[in-house]
Structures are given as C-alpha cells and as structure tokens.
Image: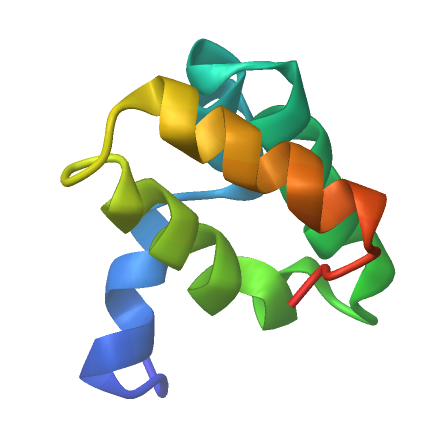
Length: 79
C-alpha cells in the first residue's frame, strides 16, 4: 500500500462506520459528519475531521458532542 502510515489507519473507518458511530451520539453529530463527508470532493478528505469528532467522544459526554455539532451546523462550520 502506498499510503503513509498515518493515513492507513483511516482505512479501518470507512464512511459507513463513521456515520454509524456518530448516529450513536445523536442526530446532529451524524448530520455534521455526513455533511463533512458529502462536501469534500472525496470522502477521504473529511476523515481527519470526522476522526477528530470521534476522538472527542473519548473525553466528553455525548450530550456535549451533540450540542457542539448542533452549533457547528447552525453556523455552517463544517471543518
């Protein structure tokens, strides 16, 4: 495989898995991730942002992630 090691680990998280995980957090988080992946020319371009959201789920309660996603959607902050 010709991808850098840092990018290879994203292969474990295809878009369907990322969206499925965020649906477990809430509707706003799932919508934000779907928007991020849809707005990029290639879904892979949004992986880093989406993985950052998933990483935040390790440190913050889902209710806070959901509130942050709602705010991001309201102000069109999709990056």
